[in-house]
Length: 427
Image 1: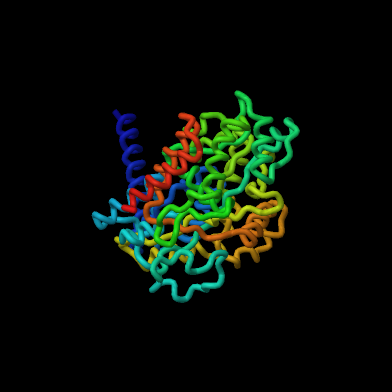
Image 2 (image 1 turned 30 degrees about the vertical axis):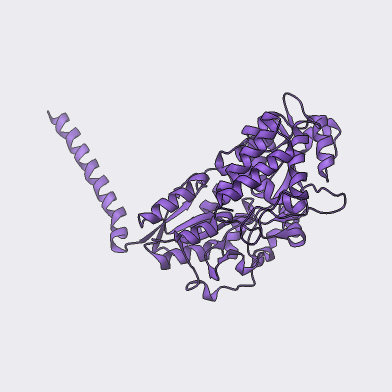
């Protein structure tokens, strides 16, 4: 009986100690209530990836600087950010801060799902950005603060090219020849993606760079598709040649998306592919290691560098942000030189010029990023993205898939894509 009493007494003391500890932990929070802001990102902080760890460092640094503000990070898959934001805005419930692709900035500004930042951004140095300040302004109002930049580079496996005796291609003719020499059942010589999944991002990123490389433009000033010219014919013919005449790619590209290409380069089942530079360090860290390298995107003409659309994600403020002042402090910090340096170490190209003054950019591990910023400075441009950009991707995917899967001629597929899209606009 005495033994049982002692046991109960120990349990009671243990419970009281735990309760006291809990009240001690809760007390400071109650004494100094924090303002909470909700932040949507597609990257999970501290997930072990270069970008995830960079995000974790930045959130921690922000909360150390602003202990009165708590950041609640909600991880949303990239294809779901846009529809979730539209739905949330309709119900007047949005995150305070969101990460939005520059391609969809106009869509959300016109839909009213995000709010202008001009009243907060007055003190920001407008000259301290790689892209012009107005690049993320819609109808004269600033809607997005550039978070990071990327461009469409050629990523390739050095080990596979070396084994096949293939030099890094500089033109699309060289891609066809080199990838055709490599292509086999176990490895695709050149990978690209025509899938409609993931908002057809792999295809959209390809076409937005390929049409200017061919000397044309996708849309006119009124948003009408106008690439049914020599530039469009070059691009659609290339798709036919890569899977046909050159035997550089398999028909699997019809179902490939951005992640398929990333995984292929990581595992070595894809020898070459054009992807955004933001995937470079992630692919190396996931297994490719030093076997992965980058080169400028191929051009159609020898000796003529290909122009590139400089894209990336912006930080925006949701329409129904509950704490706009705190939200702006977070946006301002995350686009500061301090936070941008962490992004750089995670493999994302900083958007602010002042970031590049840090001594880290004199170290060997930063040289690939200096190469990127140099290429952007010489060959970068800002693309035009109409509100119907995502629907354009679905139409384009259907047309290009018909070349690969149904044997449609490039000319027929090109006319189908342009005509169908323009009809969707009422033109």
